[in-house]
Length: 104
Length: 161
Image 1 (cartoon, rainbow over the protein chains, first blue to last red):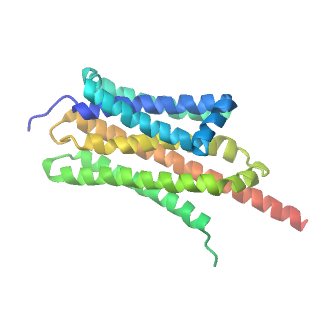
Image 2: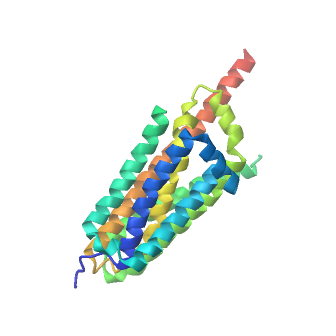
Image 3: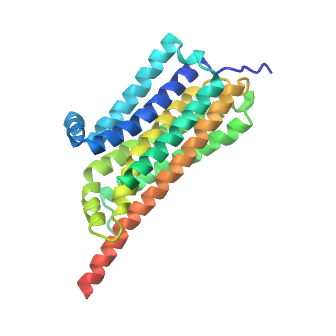
C-alpha cells in the first residue's frame, strides 16, 4: 500500500475554509450580540439574524473552499498544520462562544 | 393524546442530531480500520452525517424561529434563566460548527483514507469533533428543556398555593 502524506487538494482547501468559517461564526455571534444594529440588519436580510448567520456561514464555507481549491493556497500549508488549525479553531470557537455568553 | 407540530419537529430535530452523532462515531471507527474494503462504507457514513445534520439544522431552525419564542419567555420568568441566556445562546451558534464539520466530512472521506495517512488523520479528527460538539449540543438541549420544565412546575405550585 502506497501511503500518501498530503491531503488532497479539495480536502486541504475545504479544511482551511472550515477553520476560517468556524472562527468567523464565533466572531459574528459575539459582534452581533454586542452591537444590536448589526443584529437588526441581519434580521432584515432573512427574517431573523440567526437565519442570516447560517446562510453566511454556509456561503463562506463553500465560497472559500472553491477559491482555495482553485488557487491551491491551502495545499501549500502542511497537512499536519491544517489538522491542527481546524481542531484548534473548533476548540477556540466553542470555548469562546460559551465564555462570551457566560460572561456578557 | 395530543402531539403538536411543535413536539414532532422538536423531537425529529433531536433525533437527526443523535443520528448524525452516531454516524460520525461509525465513520470514526471505520476510519480507524480504513482499508479498500470499507472505503464505500466510510463515504456512506460521512454522507449520512452530513444529511442528518442538514435535517437537524432545517428542523431545529424552523422550530427555533416559530415555536421557541414562547418557551423562551417561560424559561426567562422561571428559576433557570441561564437555560436560555447561556445554554440556548451557545447552542444555537455552536451548532454551526458541527454543521460545517459535517459538511466537510464527506469531502475528506472522498480521499482514499486507506492509502492517505493525512486524510485518514483528518477524517478521524473531524468525526471526533462532530461527536464531541454534537454531544455538547444534545446536553444543552436537555438543559433548555429542563429550564422550561422547572419554570412550569414553579408556576403550577404557585397557582396551587
